[in-house]
Structure formats: structure tokens, C-alpha cells
Image 1 (cartoon, rainbow, N blue to C red):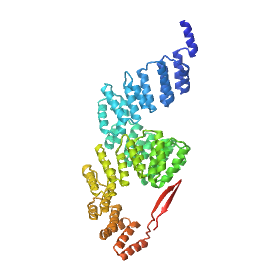
Image 2 (cartoon, rainbow, N blue to C red):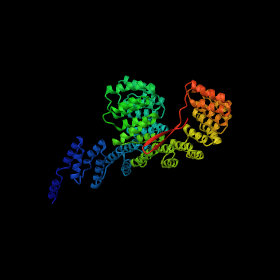
Image 3 (cartoon, rainbow, N blue to C red):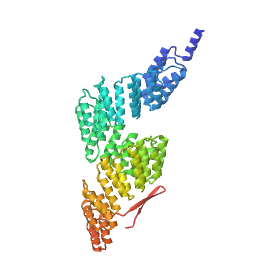
Image 4 (tube, rainbow, N blue to C red):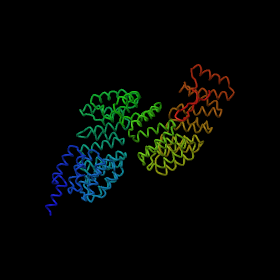
Length: 610
């Protein structure tokens, strides 16, 4: 009977022994022939040896083959095999690689025993998928369980600290590293350089970098990228030059980092030099490099070069599209081009990421394109029902600027973990639409949530108080900013305070504040005083403000018109005529006011009468 059973099994399987099956599967996997290896699984309902599945799952990990990897897991579960430590760890790695962190944790949580590799796989999975807090908690749990980390454990948990800009926790982990055998490990040292540089501690990052006995491209990239993030463009470019002098070959990430540091008109020459080196070294076809070049050209003021580079690409990719559309959105005069490029992306049926959608929401906010903004909101919800805080902030800003304050409020409520930008955006929306008291109440709620406001938060608050006549409350906010939060006022804060006093008719207090300023008053400050002087008929102070404005901005017509209006209101027609004549002599003409309305698919501009 046993002999008959063995013959039957051999007939059904086609391959006679587990060894032969394993050999065949390994051969197929080594050749990257995943589909054929899976066909063997399909034709063998039961494979009693777990090692037969291992090379197939490894190939799924290497090629990020989500559907196939899930099939392998299901096939094992169906066979009734008990998963061992090694295979469970592979499953954690697989699910982490495809971004299904919940499935990865489910496997990890059910493991009866865990090795340092298992713990590291889970920590790395959390860190790589943006769950930095979970990565830190898992690392702590590993330490409590008595398992000591290896170089990859420390590298992964330092990556989590870096993404959270959590320097203090990073220093504690650095203390653990000092006591371990991995202090001089190249992978760990590079991660430490990255942590300190991204957290703004460039001196510490430079010290760690200089004490490294060995350096690779990753360690150089960490320092170059750190200088770039901190806005130290010259140091970033200088470190890049040192890397080349040291004989180290840059990679695509090196170019991405050094190009991200380039911005402003003076950087255009550097961008062109780097572009030449990229072509010389053969990196021109890399998506990340092309996208970085487009971004750098646009930031350096050469949007035309950025567009030419984009047009020259044989195949458009997500990175280059994102780079160009983001720069179009930030450069005010290119917002209509952003709309055109967005249309091209839709026609190409290209997958859109959150950066593109945020950029387009910025365009919709500044062009008052509420209808398109709502469509993007719907598309974002369809793509990812629980979007991140950056997307949520973009929704708040778009709805608030479009006058839909209730929708802005709902977008604010939908954000699970709000940051200072979330609160500030809604405060700004309330202020712009005359809800001064709501803006103040929201600020107080923000303080109750132990979130520290920044200088922009106070600027939006002062604006809200200024436009709703809340002079006393505005002054309280200003003094709180300076005394409680130790934020030094910028010229914009002073401008809001001067406007606040001026709108309330407290012209002497406004002028006194201007005299006490530690920085030079701007045109907006003197313009607020001049405008208020026209309303309240204060000719002497109006003349003082006008003289300053004529010096600061002699070509701005509204300053002459305002002073002429003050003279006319006082009955001094000769002086009013002199102002009009001075405008004519200097060739200054007042631009006509205009408004725009959108009717169907066309936008119309309506000019006001002179």
C-alpha cells in the first residue's frame, strides 16, 4: 500500500523529491523567473518543507512583488506548516517593503521567539514607512526584553529620530552606541552624522564626520544634505567639492542634496556647473537628478531652463513633474502654467502624489479656484482617506482663502495630529474674513493644547485684531509674543501693530511705536499711517508719512494720491494740485483697480473707473 501511495504522489507532483523541487525553485529564483517558480506552488497543493518557500519569498522581497508575496504567505498558511523564526522575519521584511506595516506587525506580534534580526526588521519597517514613534517604542521594547541591537538596529532607530528631529532621544541612543562595539561602524557613524546635521547641530555633525576613519558616499551625502537643509548653501557646495577632491564618486543622492541647496539668482552659475558634471558622469537619465535640476533651475530664477529641461525628457516622470509644478505654484506669475501642467499630468494618467496635490491646492487658493480645489480634495480622499498633516493644512488654506471658512474648519477637524501650521492657517482664515474673536479663541485653545505658537501665528493674530478693531487685544498679543514667547518682532509685526492703532484712530500711539522700533520702518508701516491720516484728517502727520514714502518708494502712485486727498479734504486745493502735478512731472500714473470673476470656463477682469 505504501509503495502505491509513493508512486501516486510522484505521478501527481511530476518532480520526484523535495530536494529536486527545491533545486528547481532555487534555479528559477536565481534567474528572477518568479512566475515559473510560483507555477510550481500552484501545481503542488502541499509542500511539506518550509525551505522550499524561502527563495520565492526572497525574490518577492527583492522585486517588491506584492501580489505574489501575499500568495506565498496564503499558500503556506493553507498547507498547515508552522512558520519558524527565520521565515517569520522574512515575512516582516516583505510586508514592510510593500508598505503594509499593519500586516508586518501582525506577523511580528504573533512570533513566539524573536532574534535581533526580527526586532531590527520591525524597527526598520516602522522607520521606512514613516512610523517613527512606533520605531522608537519597538526599540525600547527590544531593550527591555534583553536583546542587544546590531549596527542595522541602531541605523534604523537613528533614522526614526532624524525624521522626527528628535535630537535628545538620538543622543540617548548615541550613548548606547558608545558603550557597544558599533561605535566605529561606518553605517552607524553615517546615521549619527545625518541625525545631528538634520537637527541643525552642524558643528557636532562635522566633528563626527572628521573623526571617521573611513567614509563612503552615504556619509558624505549626510553632511552635504545637512548643510543644504540648514540653508548653508556655500558649506554644502564646499563639502561637495571636498568630496570630489577626496576621490569619492558622487551618486544621484549627492547631486539631489547639493542641488537642493542652490537657490537665488547667484546660484544659477553653480547649478549650470553641477549640470555639466552630471552629464559628464552619466547621471542625466536618473529621475531624482533630473527632478532636482528642474527644481534648482526654477529656484535660481531660470524657470525657462527648468521648462526646457522638462520638455527635453523623452518620458516624463513623477519626480520631474512634481519639481516643476511645485516651482510654478510658488512663483506667483507662473500659476497659470501650473494649471496647464496639471492638465498634462491628468492626460498622461500619471499617478499623483501628495506634493503635487498640495502644490495645486496652493494654486487654487491664490487664484480662488474653489471648484478645482474641491475636485482635488475629492481626488485626495479617493487616493488616501486618511491624508497627512501637510495635505490637511493645504485644504485649510485653500478653503479659507476661497471664503469657505466652514469647510476650512471641517478640514481642520479632520486632521488627527495638528501642527502649528494647522492652527495658524485656520487663525489666518478667521482673521481675513472678519472673525477676530474666533481667531483669538482658537489661539487660546492652541495654547491649552500646549502647542507653542511661532512668529507667523502672531502675525495672523495681529492681522485679525487689526481688521476687526480689537486694539486692546492686539496689543496684548504683541506683548505676549515679546515677553512670554521671547519672539523678536519683525517689520511685519510692527506694520500690523501700526495699522491696528491707525485704524482705531490712535495716530499718535502709532507714530510713537514707529519711533521706538529697533528696525527701519517699511513702506507698509508709513502707508498705514498715511492712509489713516487721510481718514482722520491729520495733515501734519500725513505729510511726515508721505515724505518717508516718497523716499522709500518714489514711483508708487497711491502715496501721492493719498496726500493729495488729505489736502483736498482740508480745502488746500493748491497743495492738492501740486501733488497731482508732481505725479505728472515724475511720469507716475495710478494703475486702475480691477476684479475678476469666473463665468463657466472663462475668467473675466472688470476694470474700475478712474
